[in-house]
Length: 357
Ligand code: NAD
Ligand code: TYD
Image 1 (cartoon, rainbow, N blue to C red):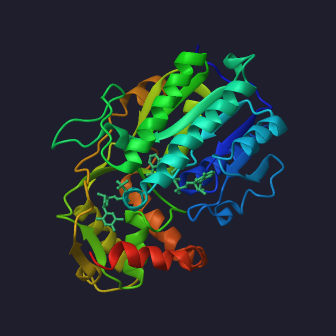
Image 2: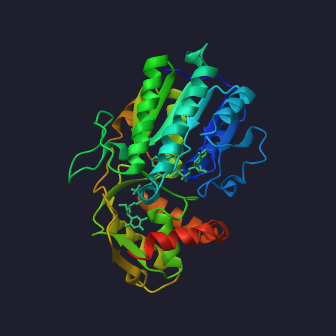
């Protein structure tokens, strides 16, 4: 059944202090003043309450610092808020970190998801029809494409990194709980997001930071890997739509219709940065440094997002050129945010990740 949920709802958003989660929380808190939005986040290195300063004093927002692998705590949060739904984004999300520490990805992404599912299954057991578990996942579960073709919702799973394997496992558990217990579950698989508030371990914010500081730009391998980029605000809009209007048991692929080879994207970023920083044309490109490839590096991801477009009327709202410029502006205007997240542990991470490449 295609259901529009009633007002006065309570929704737990897990991972709401992270990159995508903070955009989802901001959108929901502002758009639905009658809802109670509970941001459940452990605040790992990637979670940052600074991301939500503009909504933290709103009456329909509340923060719970909690680990999704802490079963007793998760069950008590269900008791406390009687949620109508969960939008589950909490995860370890960076492929490079999954290569150095796969177990952490199993713990959070697989075990954490199952603990949340168990809490929801037991708490909602008398009325699955009025409660929804929405799991936010990635296109990386589908594996790597050749030169042509697109991932559809029917593409067989073929995860190839510890990160994508852990997300694939969590997707399977969510579907299994829908099938076995009759829970109302929905999944979306999205392509690479970019935009404000992204931790500078991922390509775009890392390269903005390095260009700003005139540090080398570490291009993995030949730089010809392809990703499909989507502005994070458009992903948040899609998540809102899917939560409210997506069909129970279905999967929706979300993408930007926007494929770029890494090296072309990086060159565009260099041009924008030269202009914004008043540097000579070509100056930032001189920082390009080809380094050892990522182990098992997936060559190409690309999403066929026609299902969400046709069924739910969703399309991206801005072009990549506009989005990239807005993103660069945000990082340049929010130096304090950047300094804050790159102090301390980030320096160790950066050294370990890049020093011997
Ligand atoms: P992120 O790393 O920026 O944020 C993850 C958030 O989860 C952080 O706030 C962190 O504190 C929290 N978290 C981690 N472990 C937790 C735990 N054990 N308990 C509670 N909270 C915990 O990630 P993101 O890029 O915003 O991604 C969010 C979700 O979207 C993830 O599930 C990811 O797989 C998925 N996704 C991301 C992208 C992308 O391009 N970033 C694309 C598609 C799907
Ligand atoms: P990333 O932002 O880590 O996202 P994902 O691996 O989940 O797609 O990386 C995007 C692309 O950029 C990917 O092909 C790896 C590449 N990359 C680099 O070349 N250098 C870097 O320092 C990083 C972080 C990524």
